[in-house]
Length: 146
Length: 168
Image 1 (cartoon, chains in turn yellow, green):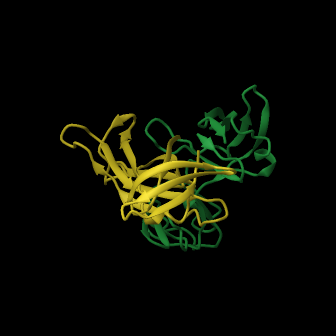
Image 2 (cartoon, chains in turn green, purple):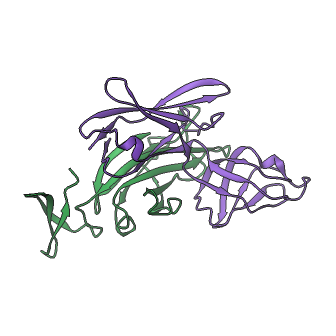
Image 3 (tube, one colour):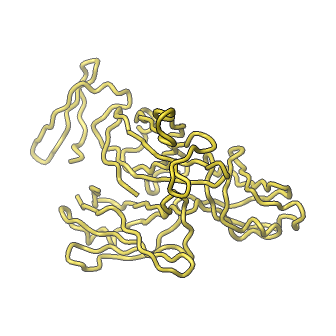
């Protein structure tokens, strides 16, 4: 399982999967379903997905079984800044279930509205902060995740 | 993978074959964390990432399993165990979600005994490692650690290596 990296609220998480049967690309019975779970220790019900969405076929006339989607990290991700588990599930033509899984982190400093227009690091005695500017020109600070 | 170690944290890993079919080990995998010099920092047993209890099983050509608020989505490979009565559902199979409280499995229970209670399900191949203070306290920021999961399939021993863990 790969770790996809660190993202902020308002970013788009690139999800790409190739559906395989016996190691060979094949079209699934239905588009793959991406389900994203917060991995929040005792803070959350981790079985409650933060997002559930289908992936779309990329260049279906030329490439078999390639699906992708850019998942917007919006309001449903605002309840938990931490690690998430992304699963992509599909069933092949014989009904067998397949799953791929990744992890990624949502770190402080973003905006679930996707309206950050500028960001700067501010270091003060005992504090390491991000100063962000939103589209409406308001300012906010967040702890620098480093 | 950068990992803050100032609070307890959880790692998740997947066991799957080259076609992304989730692998079901003979028993729950065990894990070990090594520092850069090969010293063992901690070990333990992984637990299922997604699991739930079963409330009833229908008797039908395609069994329907009730598990209140199961939170599954789509089509999922699951391992079911501990069901009394229609014991044929105690298997690794494909679950298809039909509602928020039920999913079906392609197993014929129409001639089976009525549901007699019990049962759990877990999503096949997905496991979690919960790192508590005892192990976390030995992880030094700036150091990189190797995390391994041992498991066996049909008694054949295998090792899964997680992403290197860089403590911050």
